[in-house]
Length: 196
Image (cartoon, rainbow, N blue to C red; front, side, top):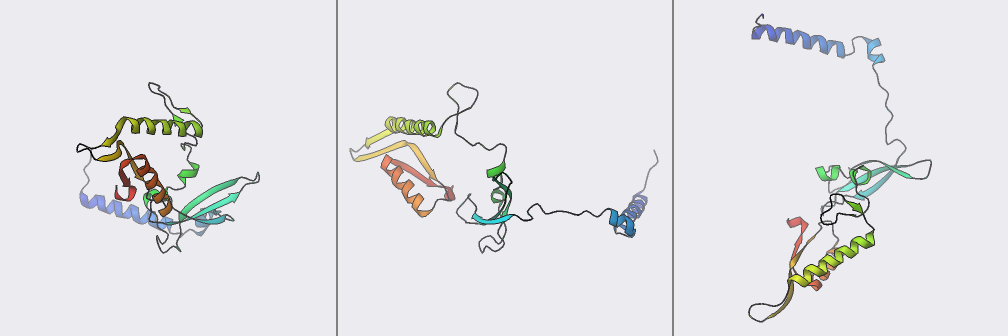
């Protein structure tokens, strides 16, 4: 096998790069015209809607582009950051940049799923059944871990077997309601997503 010196390799590489660059700069006008691609924008004629990112409490603004199909359904075409927003100035974090997947992902779970103990597969259940299961589990955990008095005989009426983590996208009213509800159940361990 012939050996190539570093100098020869650089000469051949520079000559090849120069030839490649010269051929792609449009010196052949006919070739440049034949390679021209005309694009139609995917969001051309779409309706522009403004929203807020659902992931955290920062409040980044989103612009959603939608189109009404001939059958009357609305199709989501694109979601991007709003450049007019003073909060995010059009930029989005990695979670916000994937906001469109909340609506269009083929892996999106659209109804409650339940896997009974010992089962290997998930099954769809109704929202009423799901809420009943959650309520029953909360009651069972609360009953099993309820502490009426502490070691000194003081009345504490608390449950130590349940914790609650609030979402950072909660409004003030939602946070107040969730806190009152959880305190009413006797929860001691309350947390908020922004601190986690």
